[in-house]
Image (tube, rainbow, N blue to C red; front, side, top):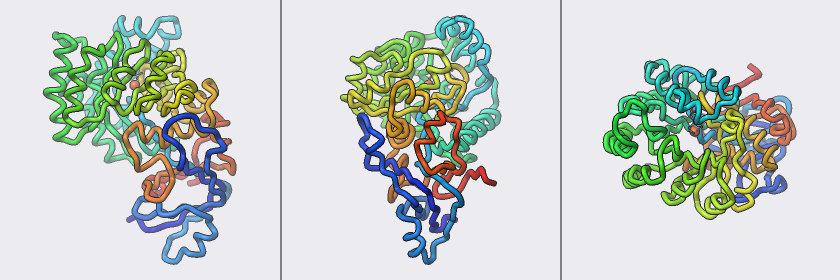
Amino acid sequence: MNTKKLIGPFKQVIPMSGLSLKGAISDDQLMIIKDAGIIVADGKIQDIGDFETLVKNSEGIEIHELKGNHTCLPGLVDAHTHICFGGTRANDYAMRNAGKSYLEIAKAGGGIWDTVTQTRKASSEELVKRTTKLANRHLKNGVTTIEVKSGYGLSVAEELKMLRAIQETNKNVSADLIATCLAAHMLPKDYSGSQSDYLAEISEQLFPILKEEKLTNRIDAFIEESAFSAEQITPYFEKAKAMGFDITVHADQFSTSGSKVAIDFEAISADHLEASTQMEVELLAKSNVIATALPGASIGLGCDFTPARNILDAGGALAIASDHNPGSAPMGDLLTQAAILGTFEKLSNAEVLAGITFRAAAALNLNDRGQLAEGYTGDFIGFHTDNYQEILYNQGNFKPCMVWKNGELVFDKHK
Ligand code: NIG
Ligand code: FE
């Protein structure tokens, strides 16, 4: 049972509130609440303020007193992962580092299709076990909300197997898993019809079941030469929109065109954007689409980072996600990747932290998390430091020592 409790004192609470969804942010805009306590009730934040003052008025409130110096951030949000999969792609990684390109490896029978084959072979139980393990690892690293895509099933039955496994995993783990249907990841090699036939079949047969079983309200597609064109995806996204799904797009990873599709369909987010030119950057910035950078894919593939600085300077909303998947982004460490993106793209601490908290929540169309303020979910994390700058300065090698989800302590390194 969730009783009312006061947690603290934290040397610094960085609530990430009062900041704009779009555009550049400097560190001096960050609110820092010093020597603070957080009151949570029924899983939600009720108050944040001076710890000693809160203690004085704490009659009937349980006090969870922290020893030593701690700095508190909102629970991190990873708005793009593929952590439900079978097998490994260590061989792809070796081939790639031996000089083969992502598309060459895919054409030679590796790539996404290899993971589809291995995921189809895996039982539902195996998928649940794997996804649980990776979600729990993420939770320990401070990630309390994790988006998880299907997209390694690529048939109605196999996509359902994945999405049901994600739904089942969500019951077992403390983090919230937000499922997304990525049946439009590539044309399955064993499908005899065209891209358009495949997409029509998926939208007619799978979409109604997603609604019926409440498996997801998000539809994603990979717009790329090796996957689907803007033209092919149009009827698919039209159908998804008409049924009330939120749209998200794998856009501009190797070539442009996906970001325009995202804007035209008023997608919640356009993710990747490594190939976006200034023209795409400016169009995205003018739109309400959240631009999600995936530095883990740049690090995994050894290619350019998303032009994050340009996106922010143009006035865009920048989220940062791990893209954790067995192929292009095998590391899966959000904090490390976000810190590295910050170094290469010259992002302020505030911009990086915004990208993995409230701006990432917006990329999932969630407005109840990603900041610490009255009424928000009690998802927050503590680091052993009295200075929030230490967090990104350590480039991911400094992890939280405590994680609270809905006001409950779900990870404590001291124990
Ligand atoms: O986001 N770009 C397409 N999809 C994934 C890669 C998936 C894979 O390689 O298995 C991505 O990078
Ligand atoms: Fe992805």
